Length: 455
Image (cartoon, rainbow, N blue to C red; front, side):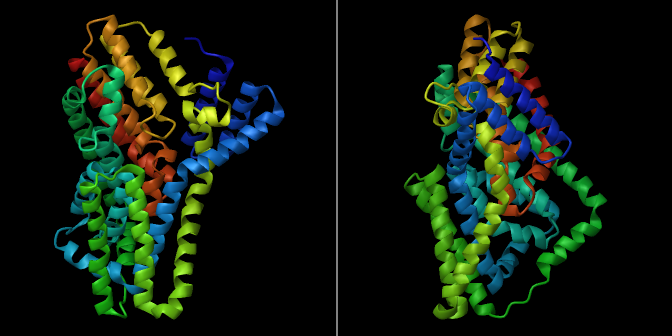
């Protein structure tokens, strides 16, 4: 495996983009330039490179469209609930469980974990955000830390294990030549280490942040608490109706084994129906004709405001995956990220330490496309390759690659991977990724140490 000028250009551009991110600057222009450069190097034509840029943006939008729509519809539903005051009523019974911002962090996190195991994180984000985010604000948990809890427990702890649906371990195990059960058993000590360290560090960072920003926390608490309800009986009914509908969604998903995109579609469809029902009950059919339209406009305005730059950013990084590259560059295009990962694995001197670090590096690199799953076949196949070349235990090595890939790309530490949570919580994706960075890196370090004893 050799790297071409296309691979080298992709590496250099990616590094430059990461440097720009470190300086807390927007990366839309570097990503546009990067996509043009990749298109020109691949095709040798300026005209073709411009077409590649457009096609990359179109296909990036298509890839993200389902997330854009579900967030828009959930936000539009929340507008209807907020106008009625049903979200305020929903807080009352949950207050008995969530007594302060510390318990809010853990309850949001573990609820997100359980729902993510059942239906995957994307639909879980919409459900948990609608149900628990207002409560978190009521007890003084800053929205950014609610987002951290949802992101770490859902897209990190939940998706990297995937014990119920078993999508991630199935892909990794198949590529590594082992059974799914063997993969899951091997992942448990690594998964526990990653989960405990990351969640623990995030929690203590939150405590420190709360001490340093007491005034801001108090203001945020007041923002949620100061509400007046004009129709309390109707608000109480809707406060029961909304969670009952979403819980019904979960039951249907479990019974009929609906997950992933289909589960997200069920949540989105439920949200828009609830938007209509709540608004009609609140305003009557006459006024609802206008009000529902306004709510949907607000929802899509919010969603598109969040996703507009993400479509451009993701267009560049999606080119790193083979299926996307073939749509944009041409049918003969290869997966740049996979090629780079294979090159690294083929040129690193073999030792237990170097093998573990290589598997980690490959996981990070392939996770940069923001999918979380596209790098799993490579993680498994590289683990199998290393195991064949020496006394290496393939299962824990493959699962290390799985955990790293999903935590990066699933995602928790790249802005284009945390968009669903950031959008639902109304925080900046870059801020969320930065909050996650130190806890996740600490988790990586601890997990790598444990992996050295297992492989």
